[in-house]
Image (cartoon, rainbow, N blue to C red; front, side):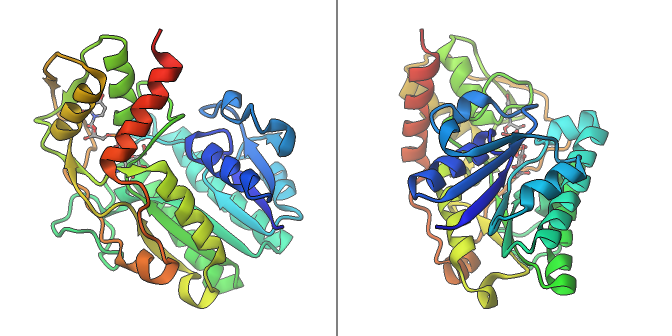
Amino acid sequence: MASYLITGAAGFIGSHLAHALVARGEQVRGLDNFETGLRSNLADIVDQIDLREADLRDADAVRSACEGVDFVLHQGALPSVPRSVKEPRPSHETNIDGTFNVLEGARAAGVKRVVYAASSSAYGNQPGFPRVETMAPQPISPYAVQKLNGELYMQSYWRVYGLETVCLRYFNIFGPRQVPDSPYSGVMARFILQMLQGERPVIFGDGEQGRDFTYIDNVVAANLLSVQAPATSVAGRVFNIACGERHTLNETYDILATLLGFMHPSIHGPDREGDVRDSLADISAARKALNYAPQVGFEEGLRRTVAWYHDEFAR
Ligand code: UD1
């Protein structure tokens, strides 16, 4: 049995990791400030984990949370590209200072490895698909810059202090428990809830923008593999975590509408500021070094996600 600290444990991705680790009999400590995370995401396992309420910007609390753990899965962040465009300071402080605090805490505590939730937004709008980790990053939004900064810090702590770090560049993750009703919600959760409530979702732009939408179980698997992989293959490295497929918003809308029996055509609004046009990952590095392979494909992921939201929100 190993011990894990999950930052952002009550969030969408963090809570899935917590459930997976508890199911494997691992010891789990969770950190969350509950600003965007929900206690209800951990309700069924709260008695089995050491859940601490603290902010990533609180260096002392983060240092204390790192004590005695083998691995840190650093998922905590203030997410959303548009949120960071509207108000960059809070996400700057959480995503940059918070990540620094995690690394300092991990270093002081002698943690074996830190796995970091990086973002595909690092690639920006440059030409060249699929995205390969060797491409020079060209972040556009403050959020993308912040997440990339975290990667650089992860690599620095490996090079300078020998702290094993692995960066996973997530490509548009979706699945159960993603907050659906915030203006900053990911598109999938937002569209599903709107369709369930009979509201017509708005597609920003022409809807032909593409994303490498990735079901949550694939991300959980990638994190667990990142912890197990030999340091010689993964330490100090960055890996795309995705399915390696591009799906447009128009296509996604149509599949969701069919699954939910939603009869209305989409409404289109203006392009969203700071948006990237396309996103598609080359996942061969993760396949090779982590033995990662997507386990749940796009359509199966959509079916599972729709089923979950239907159970939770359809009245
Ligand atoms: C970005 C990052 C992703 C990161 C996430 C965190 C890229 C390619 N991806 O996702 O790695 O984890 O931020 O928040 O940069 N949209 C609509 N209508 C809506 C909502 C969204 O049309 O009501 C559109 C957006 O304009 C965008 C797409 O849906 O084109 C996806 O948006 P969203 O789910 O917010 O994720 P990204 O910003 O792509």
